[in-house]
Image 1 (tube, helix red, strand yellow):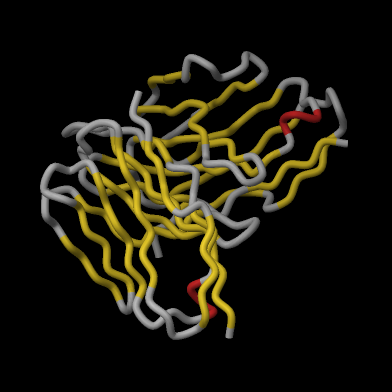
Image 2 (image 1 turned 45 degrees about the vertical axis):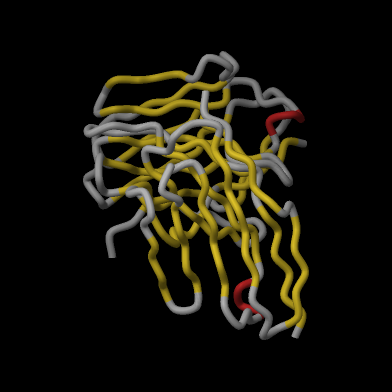
Length: 111
Length: 113
């Protein structure tokens, strides 16, 4: 089945140590999104790629970066994780008229 | 920016009861999505509504979008414990090429057997 896959499901990182979260899609959708969801809150869009064009939300901290080397893969890099960055990170793929498909998420713990 | 308000914030029902969750937008909706989320997991797509007055059903879940496209409801008939989770509505900002989803704060549903 076509889907969005996130790895790993759980990630523990040390305070200040760079960490990368991965997302891949088999839908061949041209847009990929990264959302941050903190406990008991709605998912919040961090940024998205339309093909290779990167679009940052205005309030996304500089600590968060993203890479999309090809249509299928998209990475979320957190350069210096703080305790406040502990959250569920959700990746989604979308294309006009086809809706949005989400992955299972990566739960990030910062120790 | 588009704001979505969901009500109620949480809901506890007995198995077999019907329930309704509402989602209200501050602006006319281009598209409205409903997702379900189990604790600690990703979002599972339920339904997408785009036309005013549209109604869709899947198994025991029915979603409606009002004629003005500013309010949607999700109705569950004869609830089961498997329906428990967090229900999120999402507003699609997009046009013909692509959009972005903005979510409501979610409704936590508990179903007691």
